[in-house]
Length: 421
Picture (cartoon, rainbow, N blue to C red):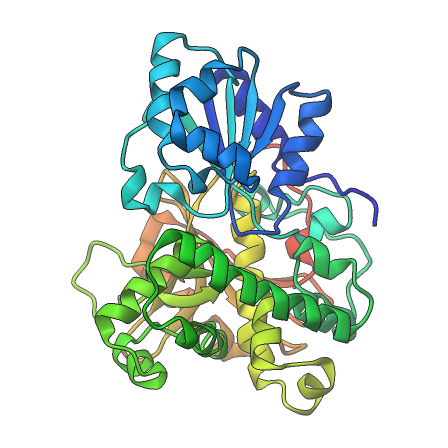
């Protein structure tokens, strides 16, 4: 397939223009190496080195400072988590001579969560995260939904084209991993996901820590996939996978460090309300979830229940991708009370303004569908900016009082207004 432009490219180049060290991290096989090698050709000329190469890794481990001192021009260090010693040397060189864009690093693990890399590069390094392809990237456009829903004006109209239910199901079950979207058949996608999970567990996690129950990790991943969109209950999950809670929490932290597992925190106002504080389980890609639980299009048509939770995860991760290049850059949460009134996703801007988002697979909006958004509006008061129901219908409808129903397509087709909150 043709090389698709990544919507994070401009932010990456901006960071390189004024910051000595830029770290681009994310799950393996999301396109980090492809992106940095592409921009190194013209947009940011640099020498590319990868620590996946045993000789290069060995030289860097033996003498990190001497290894870096050999390169005067900007350099790219790929898979930097494999040589944690390099960070101390980078800090020394940046302190000796501060040059913007000197070091572009990539990593398949969140080095900021790893104990061995506790040496701070505060003020010297900007960190960007790359996820699998977004829907807009696959259609060669840059989505602006996140900025649009925080705009002060009425939401812009959608283009006329709205995905069919079948198209939406295919999008969700396929996901966004670059290698997967280039494969035409379910069998070939399944083969790739099988190899990917094995590689991640036997290589990435072994590089990070001593894994005692390695054979239990595929089962843990499948259990997380089956619970995607549900609250994280350590007691229940510990019993289901057969691991002590302390071990389970450690493994979840490792899965988070390699960007497969994403716990969505709960939103709560500073009030004495009885709200659920547990995070919600998300994985980084809806295609990976579908693979792990063995869900295909035929099964969705016969039982749509599992698809509803995967759809919620799909939308959450599409928003997470868009946040990385949006102007607003809100934080993302979920909201739920003890009597099960909930809002699937809550976006909160740095100013504290809130946008609530409900996800519905149905082709029509019912009165009960706005209940959670109405409660969120009541609790948030003047900070409540807008409530959105993303649903399986084709019409954009105002529900009154800053509540709107939009087709799910709005996520990658809506146009942002020039005036923003």
